[in-house]
Amino acid sequence: MRIIYLDGQFIPENEASISVFDRGYLFADSVYEVVSVIGGKLVDYAGHMGRLERSLSEMSIARILTEAQWLEILRTLIARNDLNEGLIYLQVSRGNPGDRSFYWPGADTRPTILAFTQMMALLDNPASMAGLSVVTLPDLRWGRADIKTTQLLYASMMKMEAKAAGADDAWLVRDDRITEGTSQNAHIVNADGVLVSHQLDRKILHGITRAAMLSLAGGLNISFEERPFSLAEAKAAREAFVTSASTFVMPVTRINGAAIGDGTPGPVATALRQAYIDWAWDNAI
Image (cartoon, rainbow, N blue to C red):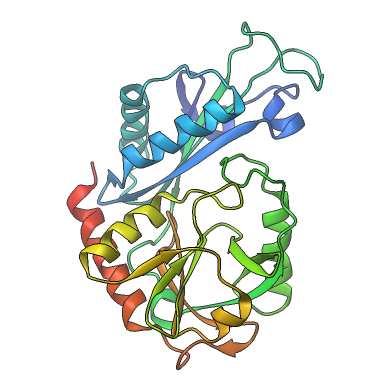
């Protein structure tokens, strides 16, 4: 039985309950983070905590746990669930004011805090050898994609539409420019051999894996630009790939049915994936 953390207690998952009046349930008024675990250790913990703090601040949700307290909670979950490889999700909602109202409750409403583990093969993912296929779909999300909220319905709908089309996932397009994937940042290596990644703004999530990847790219003397790119540029690219906590660096080999490059994972994505895994092993805590 999986042990979860809920509002100060470590309990079996089947004993957990949250009020029907919790604003996370009624309004998706909540934020979350997902941290990779390899070898029983947390990958890029400080980066994820920094983004959690930013999301809480942007949503004006009270911060009631310190980074050190979160670390103790997550390490306890890893130990009690014997998690060697996978993910930890942590979610913070504005809490339960006892009734439904569009207006935010007063400061006496305590946020609801949830964290749980999920086993997943991260290091030996077969998709890294074959690459992913994606289709492009309209980016109709709200205008604050930079806040990591639990408002994920559109992303879920687009994943299902991609699945129905026979693809692994989708890239989202706004104003003829690819913003990002449904749950990953999107990147290409263009015809000139330059890695191109959408710049940080309100149109994309500020990916923690993305940031680490770009830092590693610099160390490997891979030139990169942070700017939007079009679907036409992506189709003409030498390589394409995505980054996220659950995929690390994952090649994309087909877009809308068309092969990217020679249709196999390219050398840049392959090198960056290995560099990221090496970095993760060296820096996990």
